[in-house]
Image 1 (cartoon, chains in turn green, purple):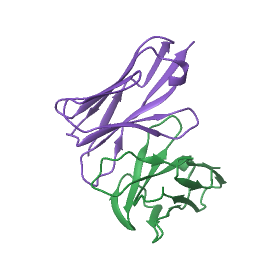
Image 2 (spheres, one colour):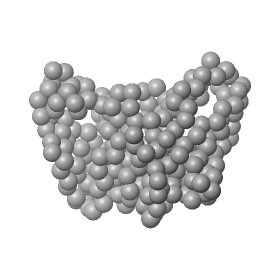
Image 3 (cartoon, rainbow over the protein chains, first blue to last red):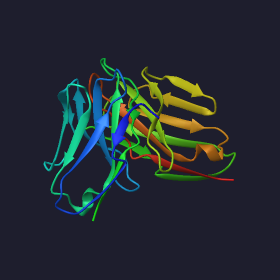
Length: 114
Length: 111
C-alpha cells in the first residue's frame, strides 16, 4: 500500500458515457497529479492540483475535468467517452514545498470503454 | 514544450549482464527522478538527482545527472530477474512544475 488510494480499480463503460475516478493522496501531501497510461505507453501528464487549486495542465482533453476538494481528495471526470480513452489512469501525490520530491503513485484505475 | 526523451525503448539482457538506459531533456532541469514500474504495477520512486554531475548508487543501480543538467542515465550492474520492469526518468524544470516523464525503457531479463 503506497498510501495513495484510487477507486475504482477497474471500470468498464460504454462509449458516450461519463465516469468519475477518485484519488485520496498520501497523508500530508498537498499536491495531486493525474496521469494517463495507454497500453505499453508512457505516462502522459493530465493535470496537477495543489491544496485545492489547479497548478498545471498537460494534454488534458476538454471532455476531461478534475478538481481537488478541501479534504484534498481529487476526482477526475471523463465524459463523452471514446474507445481511445481506454487506459490506466494514475493518481500521484507529493509533499508540500517547492518541488523535487518523489511522487507516490496509487495503484491506478483501469478504464475500458466498449 | 518540454520533452524528455528516453532510449532504448526495449532492452533484453541475459541475467548477469549490465543494462543502461539514457534520458535526455530539451531544457535544463532542476532535478531528475527515476521510477520503476513492474509489469501490472504502478510507478515506484527510486531516486532524485539535483546537482550537476551528481552520481548516486543504490546497490547495483548507479544514477548519473549530466553536467548541463539536461541528461541522465541509469546503469544496472549484473542484472537479476527481479530487475524486470519499465524504468522511467522524469524531469522537472523546477519550482512547482509537474514532472514530465520519458517514454520508459522496458527491461526483460532472461535467466
